[in-house]
Length: 241
Length: 241
DNA sequence: TAGATTGTTAATCGATTAACAATC
DNA sequence: TAGATTGTTAATCGATTAACAATC
Image 1: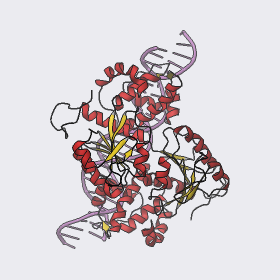
Image 2: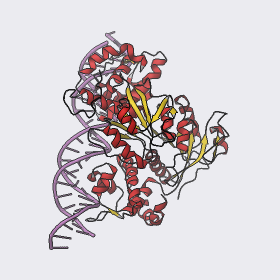
Image 3: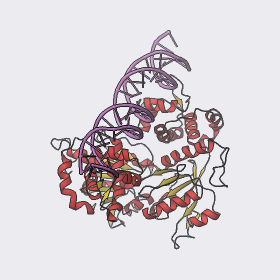
């Protein structure tokens, strides 16, 4: 978050001694607000009302204000929020004023796609290591980094705070165990399946099949409901069953 | 879900005339249960208790039973659940007894990774089209499909039910608009940013940065809390600030 | 001041959990 | 029957929303 450096110092001050209890649901939305604020900053917009920002983030303004109130927010009644200050506050709350070192484990298509994805650096994260267990891949260079085995990283690698697992499902648990043994306490798992980890380790799972299945549920609901009348958008859409 | 075909017919019968109100939170967990059941089937396990299945899925048994009760589930008291029957029920509920046609839009690294990801076919989904707007990519073959422009798909492509957007963020809204115009009402968006779509369209967003930021929040919390004593798992872990 | 918009309170809603009766 | 485990009820908890007083 390079464009936030200027305002950071003031915010740290306020934020460090806060109450502590930000609801989990709010934490999940703070990144959306930050994401919506960035283009506003780039356009030179300095102030925004909750109603507008909420629309950009896809939530209700009342929810946005409630969420921000947990940060002890500094909106101005009758005016709105200072774009840069608000972004800095949120970045501070999310811990993005430092760069978290990330390792990606599993250099298949997905792992490579993530490694070459620009969205890490400058947004609070830096890929510091890549790992795979295929001897044909170990030692090759991907995006400026040499691929290692996870075992080598454990003994001689850089400190990592976050592990991203992009291995096939059968390997994921063993990889998670190794990451935990290395001291990693935050894991983002793209492999389908539940990971068992100690309590102090935080795992978030992203599963393509799960997402599609949730969409399929609603799609089916739409098709089963009112299979009668004429608001079907495409005339060649076929109704299941 | 090929291994479910045998039991499907019976289940359809029961499930079609159900009450209808499955809570959204339950819908989000049904895929996890299905995912946990598949390896059990493969191992030849025919029956499982809620306590065990819950552990495999990473939820509490009481929540699992509550969720399944919304399906009008057919567990047997004192015994447990029939693995295949339960999987068939869940697949039915999620609409996975048919194959949903999927288009992937954006043939960058991520789009290619998803196209070559095996988890679609046989799990209720089939990739029927790939799209990109780069003339250098249009016409090439990826995983047995020829890449088209989205405009060409709109006029002469197969029917699609679900659109997966893997374009850069600036292109995502226009792609979503085109998908909606084609009759697509379910969108899985990997591009960062909020998509504006009509009410009847269902969008799920998956954003790497968002997931990492949520992890960073908790990671920071751990580091800020008790920066004193000795339960730090790795001795070279550095505390921020 | 008048108008706009925040921050908060209270009400509602939905989701989770504990407890246990039903029953295989 | 006795033991095990489900399905459901009731209690708790957390999240969302509506309403509005505070205040710029």
